Image (cartoon, rainbow, N blue to C red):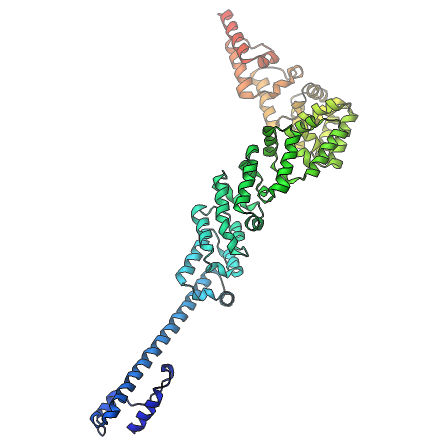
Length: 499
């Protein structure tokens, strides 16, 4: 029996350890067997017996190692399912993510947990985090993203909006993200505050900025714009970063610069006032300039002065707004020099909506203005700077203080701005004029400009100084229009005479 067992054992010696099958009695039993003590084995069989025992022990150890690996793998998978469950994934969703990116299963759990914690520190949570991981499970294992996420967390201090972070991390080619840090650092170096970097990045086409623009391209663009406002223009109009410097920005800036008479400072003023002007092609800007020159009879210099004051004239529709408004001025008796003077002071007249102007025109006609007159045109120019609602309140306020429509017409003809002032400010000045200064509201007919002076720093100050020198009967005009030096001397002289 023992010999058969030994033969079986000797055959098993050539099998792999994992498949070792020994039909051998327990060692203790073998040595304690009454009929077959160990000393009875032939000397030549004793090494074989010892070898079999050693092989049995080796197979035992190998089986234990395999079992340990299996247990560790199952523990890793279980921990992953638990982590994904905490994020908000269902079991079947986790299985899909692991199937889509098997590297997750082989990545140390502490590394994945740290990556999830970093993403959560960027305000990615709930559905946002779930959606990002489901779309890009490699986000949990990609080494290329380590520097980007560290940059977002540490250098930018988590200032980016979560939606923007999603757009950045969801990039289809993570290799392009490696230059992202350099480009953002460049913008900050040139003056974009960290607190505004989120706004800047949210307004550009990120794919174009990351894939098509090199760091050198961005540096060139900023350097070119430097004499005209540089980074300040970009901060207000970030989409400029997506423009091509050679084929778009340079031709457009040069067009405005040539129109200004090569005045870099004036060109910069236009660009700072309306960075969006750089969105319009040279053909578009040329068309508007030529229209104003031909239809309104303006010179290039005059056109630029209007553009300098109100760059939006370049974006205004020629047929819907420019043509009918200029036609209105012509019908009101304006020649080219008159139109230039009018438009320099009231350029908004060219750009306001038709409804806006129609409401204001109705109020002016109700007051008593006549169609196709210069007075009506000047009044229209003045009220372009106020809303229809405020204008209606202002007219109502004058009427409540006893002024008639004819009085309002006379005041606004003499000083058109009386219809554009804030109704709350006007009410305070009217109350002070009547209640504290003891004047009649009709005095405004002679000097309506009184309503344009600041209440505290001018009206109250001058009136209180005059009270000290017993000069309270001075006219409103004289009280407010004399220079500060003359006013001071007059007050001193009156005080001396009184003494």
